[in-house]
Amino acid sequence: MAQILHSAPRFSSIEGLGDTLSAALGDMLVDVTQEHGELLLTIKRDRIADALRLLRDEHEYQQLMEIAGVDYPQRPERFEVVYMLLSVTKNHRLMAKVSTDENTPVPTVTTLWPVAGWLEREVFDMYGVLFDGNTDLRRILTDYGFEGHPFRKDFPLSGYQEIRYSEEEKRVVYEPVELAQDFRSFDFMSPWEGADYVLPGDEKVAENPEPPKAKEAKTTDKPSDTGAGAKADAKAAEQKSDAGPAKDDKAAADDKAPEPTEDRPAKPAREGKVADTKGATEQDKEPGK
Image (cartoon, rainbow, N blue to C red; front, top):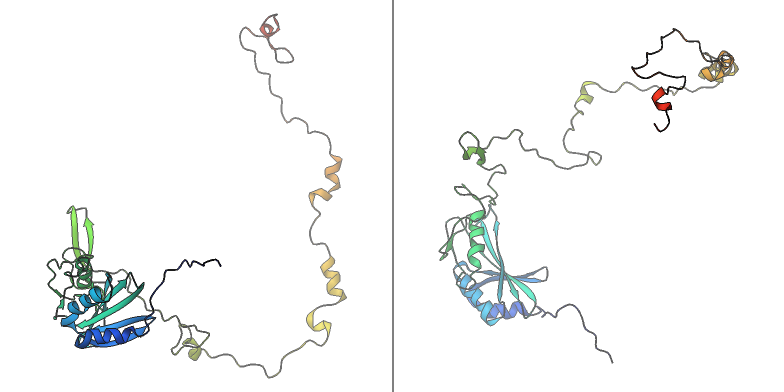
């Protein structure tokens, strides 16, 4: 019997994995949930490095794929740092996250994965989250001298400063933002479905109410009411303009060419040449010429 080979790689089921990891992490774990077929672990902030080391060494989550930030301004600890791990042997992913605020740093994981240095710099640049132990915590996406963190929910869409190259000063200059047009807010609500506000132009309805409607609709009971009839048809058939040039009999009678309007003297022949009736010269008539 032929063996069937599947193109998709095998992957381990996560059934019961939450209980296994909960027992392994112990007091380092705050909560574990399953979302979109993946496990989401909430770890204590000061134990994140120990928890990720245990997941890497003992549970085969070898690769750190990404570190992302999330901002919840209404929370006391408004930021979440999410670590996305990949198990090459099990072929599925795992997410672990911690919470922090603007002033409390998160322990770095650069000692586990060197690539975390770049990822932590990105979270710092966009959200302002500090990472304790990262020796090169600099901005990585924004420009030098940039103020603020663009991915925070309270950061304005237009920013605080704009840069341009000045031809007068021959350098890049920073200036306060000046918008030629303010941002517009669109609600994308269909006016046919009904809006909870007055649409532009509808305010004129109250000023100019609709005219009263007729009590009875007027109908045409006979052709004379509409202007139709035999007299109207005869009037429409009358010819209102002259016939076109193609139907003019005078144009067909004049089939001769018109007479010349003036006599013009013949042009004098050039010196050494005598023009004949066909326009040829004497030299042109000589043999061999």
